[in-house]
Length: 232
Image 1 (cartoon, rainbow, N blue to C red):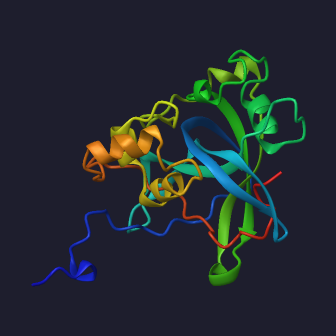
Image 2 (cartoon, rainbow, N blue to C red):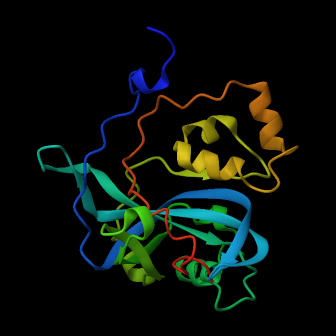
């Protein structure tokens, strides 16, 4: 049999191609905040100073996955994620500032993204064309995020999926291992990984993916190195 990884059985569930989400505002709640660490930055091919990044995932409350037969699965809401540099809130035009202020318009959580889990918002879904190897494909993306009026917040259903927060300052190996492989790779590629608390924790424990079933996430167009889709 040998040890050919390409011939090893796949442990993940088969991905079902999902239809595009209709463009426009979708009520949502924040379901996942992931600290990606210090990452290289560039704009229009020019290198910029490294910056800490985070990934925010929104659970859309009225958009649902379909199974292989096209049947809507109302227990599996769609997720939409975005990756952005973390800037000081004083940078008013930074995308991270715009997102934070939209999700926490009263400043209740004093700038702490980790506290935004479960908070309601409206995600403006847009369609973007992929580039490079993904040319010709159309992707769902977060165009903007807006606040929910207090009187409407309680009308937005609670999260269906268990929320996730991962912080590099206090790394939880179990949470880390439950993340999709592409996110783990991004985190381990951060410029401060070597010698970090996470590296030490991983060296002390076997890094294996969690058996817990995770919601099917939207595929990402990973060819956008030279565009300004999520950089400010």
